[in-house]
Image 1: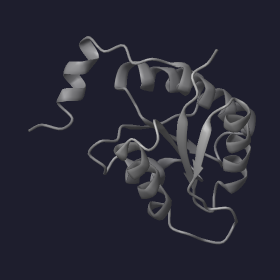
Image 2: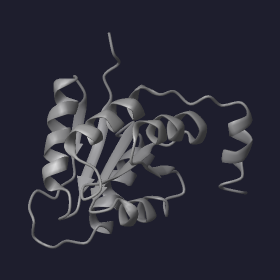
Image 3: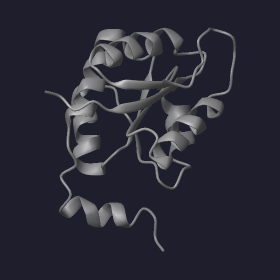
Image 4: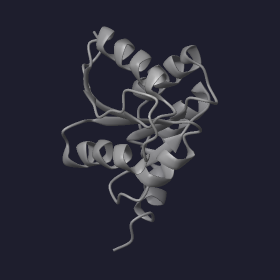
Length: 147
């Protein structure tokens, strides 16, 4: 049986449809989803959704975060401003697996205008299934936040 996770998710106006699809997928898989919005096409600012998702991950309220905007770039930039966040912008399953295995990413950024729902679903599944390898990768992670 798969482990149930709590996942925080947020999108700007570029990604509410993809967010809704992923929320349904995650809940169907038995995960708890903290939906941080937005839910419509009205223009909003991506940091207003990235920061609450990242705060939920940093505090331990959520194990992982998923952020969606048009390209995923703005969300990934905003997320990586947080000291405890390692956000990977992924456009395929291999990137999703490797960002977890090598970078211990705890937030996934997706571009709703770049990938479709089926690809996004596969990326999310790969991201959640992958495990951090540690070892040689830990030395590199330690250098991200020097004392």
